[in-house]
Image (cartoon, rainbow, N blue to C red; front, side, top):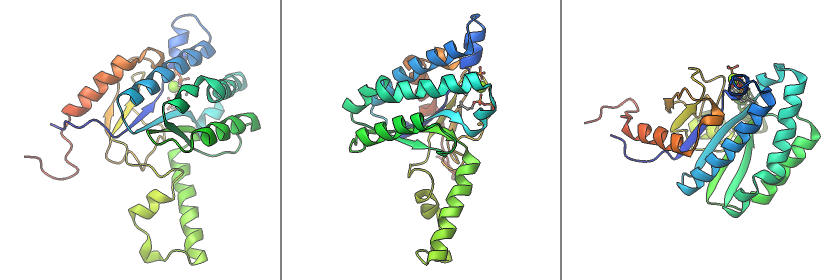
Length: 235
Ligand code: IPE
Ligand code: IPE
Ligand code: MG
């Protein structure tokens, strides 16, 4: 039995739309409710002293959605980063982002840059927001960084190992121990492919807006019962 708490938790925050539709509400209302849940979960992760939290907020593929939904989400991100997440600053949380800047609107990039800058010297916990993120794109972009360094003579082919790959991804992060995807879908939808290589997966049926701190406690409890072998044999 693995008694340790996860060091890095990843959450694929799914099911906002269905949560709203089942209540006869607009999808936007679901995203609003999801944002409230995210705030509570962040606070809980800080209270539990879990050092890394990564959340999937918007995939590169989510640009396929209706313009009105994308716009609502972009405005919600600005609102969150400008003030709703201010409690993170006092709590010692460092906010970082994973993903591509293009084609995010300038107002979103500005709000992202500001929260990164305001929290850059915090050390208690890292909150990594995957926004306009795709796991395969991250690996392509990492490959370009590494090849560039080889071409510049900064790196030789023999130097390339897993640590070099880690250091050239969007953010230098430890491996994810526990991936939680809400809403009952059993897939990872291009979330942190490299970082989740040996993660434990947990798929609660609840839609994200209903997934509260007590549900996170249950997920962590379940994680602690898992037998992580990493290819070896546990006695
Ligand atoms: C997750 O909820 C939020 C984002 C992808 C931005 P969804 O919007 O995917 O909700 P469902 O899956 O349609 O219910
Ligand atoms: C994954 O959810 C992306 C986020 C939670 C931001 P989706 O709802 O976009 O994933 P699919 O389309 O069901 O795979
Ligand atoms: Mg979804």
